[in-house]
Length: 444
Image (cartoon, rainbow, N blue to C red; front, top):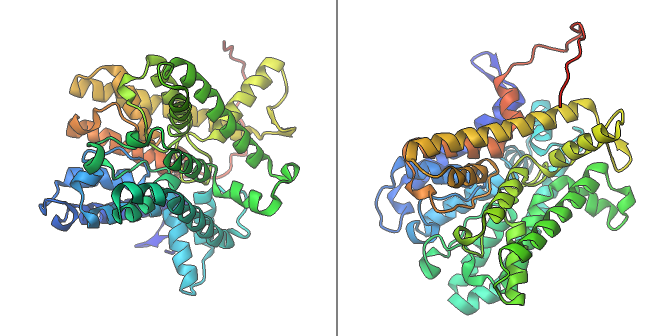
C-alpha cells in the first residue's frame, strides 16, 4: 500500500477504513457460501454481511445463532475475522509483511501509529511483534484454563470451544458457540456460577480491553507503577473503577434474590462484559431499568485506546471528568496524575461524546420508528452496536433491513473510531495561522 490509486493520494485514515471494508467484503462472501452453514444452503447476503461486520468490528450482535447456524468452516471464518478485527487490519498486515522480510514504508508506519493510538512513530514496527506475542500468550493461557471445564462437559469438542471463546473474549468480540447445546443465543448463562469459565473470560476481556500500549508499560516497568506513562495510569485506574462500582450496584440492585456465591459471579461478570465483550451470564431482559441504564453507560465508554475494544474509550471518559473538575475548581487546565492535559485532547473528547450520544439516539430513533419498537429497547441495541459490545435485549434478529443497516453502520464506526471516520471524511486544509475576533458567550 503506497497510499495512491490512479494518481490520487489517500490519507492513512482513509486507507485504514478501506482495509476494514475489504476484510468485511471477503468475510461476507465466505460466510454466504453453502459450506459455511450447517444446512449447506446459501446464506442471505444481508445475514452474511451483518455477521461479517459484527465479527470484524468485534461486536457480537448476531442475527443467526453462531453454533446452531454456522458450520465448522463458518465458525472458523468468524474466528479469523474476530482475530483480524481485534488486533487491527493494519497491525496484521504489517506483521505479515515483517515476517516476509518486506520493508515497512513511512506511510505504513504512520498508519500503524494511528491504528494503535501510539504517541510516537519510533519503534512502532517492533510493537506489532509485541502485540502478537501478547495476544498469542494470553489467548493460549485462556484456552488452557477453560479446557478442563469444556472437555468435561462436551468431550473432545471442548478443545474447539475453549479456543473459540478464548479468542472471542480477548478480542472483546462476545461471539459464543453454546447455542446448539444450551439454547439459541444463550451465551454463557449455563456457566453463570462456574469460576473455571467466568474468571478466565473476565480476565481475557480486561486484558484485551486495557490496550497493548498499557501492556508494553507493564512489560517494561513491572510493578514500578510510578514509572508508568500517565495514560497507562489513567487506563488502569478507570478500568478498576468501572468494574468495582458497577459490580457493587448490580450486586445490590439486580441479583439480590440469588445465592451469595452466584450473586457475586453474576455481578462481577455483568460489570466486566459491557465494556465491550458482549457475553452474558444472566437473562438481560429480566434485569431492572437501572441495570439497563448502567450497562448503556458502560457500553458507550468501552475499552481503552489501542486495544481490542471499542466505545468512546476510558481515557475519553477520564478527560471529560478531569475537564469538569477543572471547571468546578476554576483551574486553568484539566489535570490527571499531576499532568496537564492538552487543549486539543479535551476538544477531541468532547467531540467524541457528542458524536456517540447523537448517533446512538438517532439510530435508536430510526429503529424505533421503522420497526415500531419501544425506544428503551432500541437505545440499548444501538449503544451495544456503537460500543462494539454485542449485548442485546433480543430484538436484533427480528428488526427490518433498514434497522440492520443502521446497526451495521454503528458497529463499523464504533470499531474504526469516530475520529478516524471524521478525519477520513473531512480533508485537512492545513494549519490555521489566523484567528477570528474573540467574543464571549455564556453557558450553563
